Length: 309
Image (cartoon, rainbow, N blue to C red; front, side, top):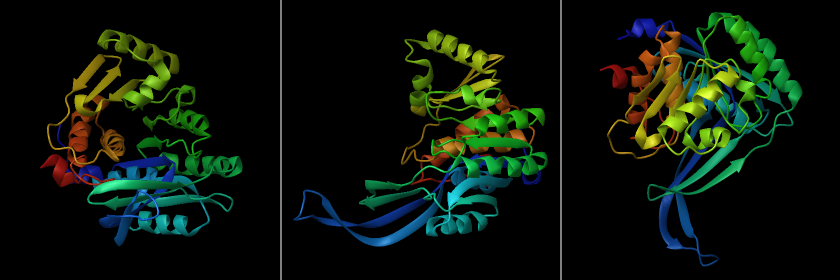
């Protein structure tokens, strides 16, 4: 099934979730510190990128669709920098602000093309700010063809169950990148997209494929999900739905960096579903997008030309 740029331009995805500012400090490593057995990095370049749900929304617009981003941030330098980065891409930002909240920042120090250190700055938003976002969600819902919840476990999706219920009422497909060991709050979503480690936290280990299928089907029925998409790194992906299972093999290419590959998968799925694809039709293209993005450094995106030409 092919799709034109024009068709994608009219697809609108509402992305809801935890955002973060990704900071990169690049430098040269030429000696070990005399103070401790650690490398000294002489920083030569700094870069700032959209992280978390902001990177998911960026993946949507890079493909040529439209995205709105609903989130909660602090009222600090990092939040204003992040909002500017988001707005600059054409994403429609809807940022709730909490003066008590520290906007999540992940600072990565890179030397010799390797990540040497990551420092995280964060805390949890107040429930009042999260609750206020539900009203904005309801305003945005009618004008979007798909809803994507990007859960990074930072507290921005404390009211996700209520939002899912409203999206179900509105007949919108709901895609969720889940976190944690309790998936009950994702009940009645269209599809959740855990990786192997995330799924094991919820259903436990499995000995073989039949046992995996049984456990996933039990989870799917218990939560009232239309589908579960298991992302399996070098083994590709498996979609479990009412028709059974659909396996796609990973794209054989050099893996440079898996950072953000999950963001690309769910963003591609949501974009294509918003444009009228079924999950089964969208899956091979989402898998191809993941294969492209792992060949790039850091959280990256895939363009329409890379995916369709």
